[in-house]
Image 1 (tube, rainbow, N blue to C red):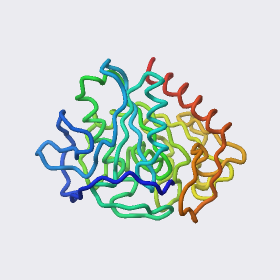
Image 2: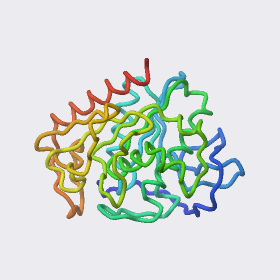
Image 3: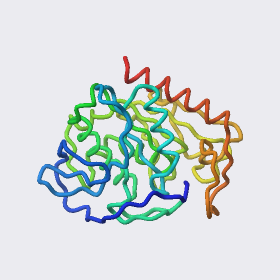
Image 4: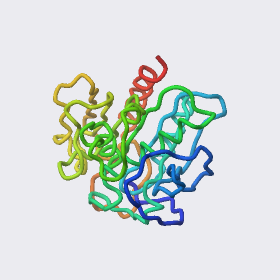
Length: 268
């Protein structure tokens, strides 16, 4: 993922296992809080949208933290008529760029717990109405796998997830997601449907690990010749971990497919 990270201050502990209930009033770039008032290690980086209530799409970043990729996705979502909420999993935890590696606090389960907290917060906002979707980029896609795995969520070590909280997310999108066995892989029977986009030439998130088992809840798209971060037209600084080429055709086609998929599941 991109190494140009937007940095914000602060660091808190994940703390003990607590019910997920968040306060409705939140200023941008401040930590969410649980029902006891304790800060959670997740922030809202940005929310794009007007004040007309509408469905919301939560965007989770990859191992480089929040980058232009997530902000570009948020702009697309706003243009399609959705609220877009970009999550910052890292700033409050003090996590730095860790491309291709596992880091405590940035694991798929941590991301899934954050998404539940953010979805609870979204439900309480006056600008939200209707369904909620998630989009995960790279290791953020591994967070989508963790979130879509009912067995994983019910045994989660950090949060107590209720039946209602398992229904918070209507649909997910995984962009060139981490599918490695030591992170998270697509569950055989996901809680919600997921659309998967991955480049055939991705040498970081290897396509062969993204098995979807013929389950109709998955919609899988593989882009011939496309690499990791194929939808980013800039130069990734200090990148020695993976091959990167911008692919305009794959970028435009994937965005068209994401829009159609979200419209199908969120506007019907």
